[in-house]
Amino acid sequence: MIKKDEILNIFKRTKALLEGHFVLTSGRHSSSYFQCAKVLQYPHYLDMFSTAIADNFKNEKPDVVISPAVGGIVLGTKVGIKLSCRTIFAERQDGKMVIRRGFEIAENEKVLIIEDVITTGGSVKEVINLLDKINAQIIGVGVLVDRSNGKAKLHNNQFSMVKLDAVSYSAKDIPDELAAKPIQKPGSRYLL
Image 1: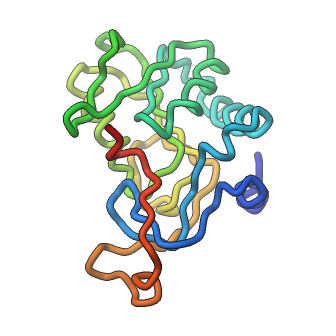
Image 2: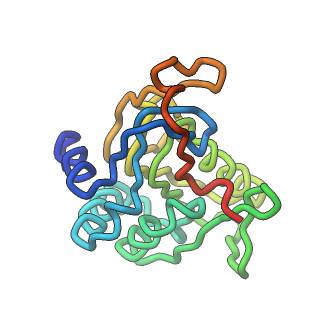
């Protein structure tokens, strides 16, 4: 297993761990941001992380891997390849998470959810709700970076490559030092 410090060093070397004032996908504010796309563009790191996640779930034998768009798609696809199963994604349409583009999940299919980063796990919760409505069998949730340090418990079979307590604030509780910095919104929730 890759150690937490090694993962954080990889993020720093690839300039995927950003510092500033960020509004996260969850709507919370933070001085740090994990831009997983920047680290996952390197085949070696994508392979390393997806192998570790896939190895954790290989005995579950999923039928399909699903990821919330946009962040989880690259990692989810590679995990699905490693597990030799279909890979799809859910995406927002009119602000609501949906499964479209002809993707289908049959009742009782075994589904693994893969996400790049969670703070509150809101996007994963939306995917779980979609899967519950069609009676899919959710076998687990795999995450590259868990910013909640394990507090965002989304499933009984949840695995994160790295857990850390990345401080974040509600909009009304932003410290003055952070509020003085220009806001950046690098997440994908509000993409058109």
